Amino acid sequence: MITRFAKYICGTLFLLLISSTAFAAIEDRGISVGAGKLHPYYQLEPHFATNPSRKEVVAGTSDMEILNRLGLAIDADVEKIKVNMDLSGEYDWYLGLQSAATKRYSDWGLNLNLGMHIAHKRKYSVKIDEIFSRSANAYDPAISSGLSLLNNNTGLALIMKPGGGALDLILSYNFMLYWYMADGYSPEALQNMRHKVTFQSTWRFFPKTALNFTVTATPTIYLGNEAGALTEEGSAAYPSLSSYKNPNAMPITATIGLVGLMTTHLAFNASVGYGTTILLQKEIDKKADILHAVIGKLELKYLIKDKGTIKVGYVRDVGPTSLYRFYAKNMWYIGYEQSILDKRLVLDTKVSYSMFKFGEELIPNNNYSGRRQDGVLGGEFSIAYNCKRIFSIALIDRLEYRHSKYITFAGTGVGYITNNLFLRLEVRY
Image (cartoon, rainbow, N blue to C red; front, side):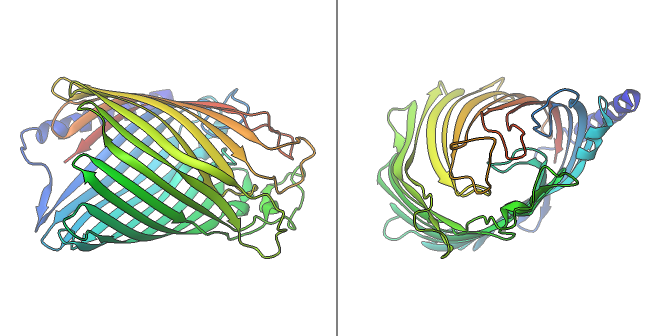
């Protein structure tokens, strides 16, 4: 198996080098088609993954995986419409070097990102967005192991720029569908659709400073609407609990903030507001657990001599989640990015810590009392180099550590540590 893996990598590297050398002399990338350009690309990512399923037990779960991604990007800008599209398909192949059990994580993925901006050069314009993806190894805030996600996000926005252009008004609607698939259990309790309505205004009262006001309502409807549908296949540890419902909820948030430059090197983005979750079912007790919270964001970005940036910030947000009535998230983060060698070599480091606080648990749990709280430490380091005009190579490492005293009603913990080290080789014409 290791010999086959080495031959596969060497052969693919050879093809990538040949293709990048063949196109190295091309000055203008892309295949011209009318007013637009097509940009085909291919990515190869050999991974070494530790605990890829985010299970509580780490032993014996490390594996090598090979991700192949083939895609096509399109950009066109004519007089009345601007179009951008990125379509890609991928297959994630687990080799099962330590344990044959990890082979079942092999899966395919599909990604579509389409944006159309109609009359984008006028005071009144319409923007249409379509984002569709099928991704492996996704996770819900409440459940983090063995999930695949089919996600659709269709958006329509009316953009208005009255007067001289200092004021922007945006009214938008997004329809979102979250359809989960899982390894080892049937996650009907997680399936949901969301209707997100947003009003946003931006007033640039100084050349480099703007005042933002945003109001968002997101009615969330759980399709299965049975927390008991989250059952372990072939296991008696998960009882039948079909009488416990995931309450349909509508998070509402409102924020006001400032974004701009404090100096030529220091930028800021600050906002504060209010968030709540309204339960939509009439049969829910009026005294049920409902969230009322202050939300907001504070971010400072410092520019270092036009080559590097340091970013530090804090975000507090709320949202709906299955198996609990809601969650509140506090996240602190810091990042550093540096480009050298005429911007061909880019270093990027990010570290974040998130604290999740959940609402009332819907399923009776004799193994834990009180409200669930999880802490998640995440880190990412990457170094990317553009070797040729169409060929780039990057080394990336991602670490995630979740800690919690919470014990599920099935008697298992939710803490884990996972690490993903991989090399990304890309040819993009």
